[in-house]
Image (cartoon, rainbow, N blue to C red; front, side, top):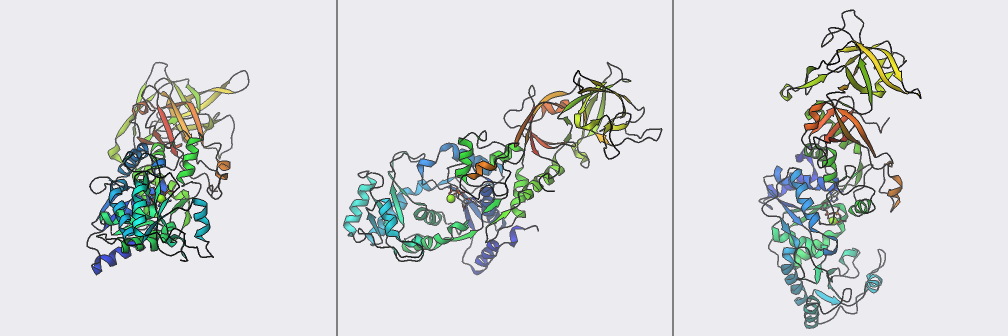
Length: 552
Ligand code: ATP
Ligand code: MG
């Protein structure tokens, strides 16, 4: 199942290009539009672009495709830079911006006008739609198509000078209104947009379209393999048309692969933005978001995300990937690399009646069951402990491997105890269990041969610390929340976040560094919250449970 970088169709193309000498050095780019935060799909694109460059001794640029100023912002630029770095990739040279090529792109637009291959069109949006035709019917030539070169040059200069209003005029390529490919029916090169740009301020009031900008940006940067997703396949003839008709000095080629769509996940920036704006999540980096920053805050690691991107392969077809594969990757990474700790999520007090009130024993326990280099931690053991309320029953059959009245259980890393009686409140709720320790059971089985039923986790009442624990689960209950237009909001999981205010943690956890991940034994994988965790108020987020509870 593992897909090494050397085994996908893009690598095959690159290998051939290098062998034939078409390409001497592989140069790729990751070209996000700074109109939202990066998500898991972008992580895939990053791993493909940076991964192929890396695997072939080439380079990968990071280029902001910032041709739509009204939807873009500096906040998004900064988050994208941070996310790419966090994923562990290094771009070649400086960060690049499509906007820094605006003058060159404009000069090329003038070049096309001079050659009679572009014209200024006055059709409004509705008229343009009518003239465009349909998939089954050819379009019709715009009445402005035959303007003279002189007139077009004049109008384009005046568009640029701000003499016209938005929507009044556009610059179009003169290609073929009867082409079966709608993208070739005199596509728009420039639109009037009287909005300031986050990089160029108000230097421009006309902005190039994606189609006119992208391939030329690739050519300027000497990109050899311009890798994008399948929805651009139909744009490739136009991409090539510009490259052929302009005096560019390199010949990039576009290749498409299938978008990553994990189940139970939304990967549309517009919809993710809606979740943020409607307050359904706390922000772009809410741990339930499939954004890189959300996954980071949730406790996912760069290694696990990269592993997942490799595992799913890179193919020429769109399809849904089971999100359980991503969860598998994170479990596997944390199982290997996260230190162990104990946290009681739903505390029930156990009083060890034979254990002296003032005594505090420090029990040494391994931080990881198989990695000695992780060292040992000290667990304070006292007369009063918390165990999880789910780990005690007054009566139970043998299948229940936890503490039962009159029976024994082992406290993880510590003694075997036996429960003697329960204390209840006025409503009959168990508020305390009274028990005693079985002597000489630290690391040993009971001498009388009566074995404990199982092992449960615990934390000292006196020496432990209170913590807030945020239990996150999948944000959507529907496998395909993205199938309709707006109904993705109907399948929000009402239990995607449960906040436990009174969890009890072993004391060392209070000093965890933010973003340090742990396995809380018997509970799952958790991470100290990147922003809110403090020694005085420890906060942990559940990354993922120990097992998949979504499949049965
Ligand atoms: P939009 O253009 O609608 O804002 P986008 O998701 O295409 O959204 P971009 O910032 O243009 O966002 O994407 C940057 C790169 O990431 C593009 O090359 C795009 O093809 C790629 N990409 C985006 N979403 C996915 C995905 N789900 N799987 C793989 N690659 C993706
Ligand atoms: Mg895009």
